[in-house]
Amino acid sequence: MSDLPALQPFDEHNQRLKANVHPDGWTNPTVTGRYNLVVVGAGTAGLVTAAVAAGLGGKVALIERDLMGGDCLNVGCVPSKGIISAARVAATVRDAGEFGIQVPEGWNVDFAQAMQRMRRLRADISPADSVERFTEKGVEVFLGDAKFVNENTVEVAGQKLTFKKAVITTGARAAKLPIPGLDEISPLTNETIFSLTEIPKRFVVIGGGPIGTEMAQTFARLGSQVTQIEMQPHILAREEEDAALVVQKCLERDGVQFVLNAETIRCELRGADKVVVVKQNGEEKEVIGDQVLVGIGRTPNVDGLGLENAGVKFDTRQGVEVNDKLRTTNSHIYAAGDVCSKYKFTHSADFMARLVVRNALFMGRGKVSDLVIPWATFTSPEIAHVGIYPEEAKQQGIEIDTFTQEMAEVDRAILEGETEGFVRVHVKKGTDKILGATVVATNAGDLIGELSLAMTHNIGLSKIGAAIHPYPTQAEGIRRLGDQYGRTRFTPFVAKLFKNWLNWTR
Image 1 (spheres, rainbow, N blue to C red):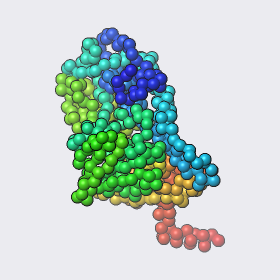
Image 2 (image 1 turned 180 degrees about the vertical axis):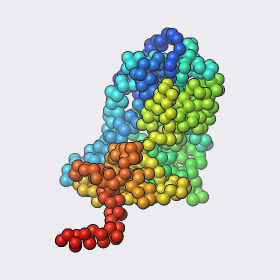
Image 3 (image 1 turned 180 degrees about the horizontal axis):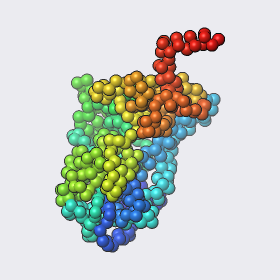
Image 4 (image 1 turned 90 degrees about the vertical axis):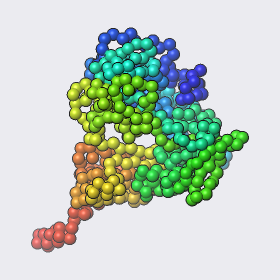
C-alpha cells in the first residue's frame, strides 16, 4: 500500500493512478551523453517543458520524486473540481422545487460514493501525465530525488545527468502556519483532504482564499456544518469587494458560517473535538470542528535540491529567483511554475513552460510580464479576473473607465435562475482598450477567456460589442459592455450632428 497521502484510500482507482504516475518497479534509463534539457519536477510546468522540448527534437530528461502530474492532477485542480461537481449537483437537487421539480423527502448525499467517483475520474485522466506517455514522447523519465551537484549536473538515484540547460519546475506545497497547537489537531491541507471517505459533521476552514472558499461551499453542500475563518472583512480579499461579497452571500445561503476579521491564535485537541481559537474584535472565540482545513499559503519546493551548488539564488518563502525571461542566477538554469511565480495556476505554469523552452533552447526573448494571465475561483457562482484591479490602476496613476453588466439583466441568466453576479470591464480612460475585467457568474471561468483573448491581441471593447454572440447565452453580458462603451461615444455634439443630418435628409 502506498504511504503517499494523495493515494489514500489505496483502492483500485488509486492503484491505477499510481501505476500511471509512479509505477512500482520502474527502472530509470541509463544515462548516455549530455542532455539538451534536464527538467526537475513533473508537475504541469515540467510536463509541458519536457513534452515541447522533446517534440522539437531535444534530448530531454524529466525527474520526479513523487507523482507525475504534480499538484494539479493529484491534489489540486482535478480532485477539487471532481467533488465540486458533485456538490453542485447536490445543490441543484436541493433547489429543484424552484423549477417545479419535486424531489422525494429524505434524499441524501453519499459522500463516500462522491469521493470514489472523484478518484475514478482522476485515474481516468492520469494516463495523460503518465510515465509511459512521456517515455513514448521521447522523454527519459527518472523517478527519484534530484540534487544539483554543480552548475551543469544533476544527480538522481546514483546517476549524474549533465545538461546544456536545466529547468526547475518543482512546484509548491501547503505552507505550515506558525499557529500554536496546529500540529496537535492534525489539520487537513489540499494534500490530504481528498483522501477523506467520511463527511465531517463539523468542518472548519482556516482561510478565505480560493482553496478555502471552494472547499467551504463544497462541504456545506455535501452535508457538513461549515465555519470559515478569515482575517479580512470578507472572503476572497484579493478580488473586488462587491464581487467577493456576491460569492460570500451565496456561501451563506448554502449554510456556511463566517468568522471574519478574526486571527487564528491557537488550536487545541479536546477528546475528538478540534478547537480553533480566534481573536475577533479583541475577544477570544472558539470554533469547534471534527476536521479542520488549512487553506492559507503555499511554500515553494526548494529544499534538498542543492541549488546552492549550482549557483541558483532562492528563498524558502519566495522560491527560485528568476528574471523576466525566467532565467535564474545561473545562466544555464531556468525555472517555471509555482516554484518561482506569484501566479500559482496550472494554466500560467503551462504558458511559462512554453516560454522557457523558447528562451532556454532557442535564444528566445519571451517575457513573463507579457503574458496575460486570467484566474478563476470555482465557487457557485464562479469568480474570474484578468488584468488590472481598480486599486492597482489608482496606485499606478492610470485613469480608467469602468463598465458593468449585471447578470440579473441577462436573459439566459434569468432563465437559468443564475442571476447573481456581473460582468465588469476596466478600460483606459477615454478609450476602449481593456486593462482588466472581473466576471462573477455560473461559468465565469469560461467567460473570462473572451476578455483574456481580447487583451492578449489588443481587441478593444467596441469590437467585442460588434461581434455577434448567440442568443440567449450568458456571454451576451460581455457583448453588452461593448454597447455600453458605444453609448459613451454618442455625445451631445454627435447627437446634434445626427439630428441635423436626419432633418436635412428627411
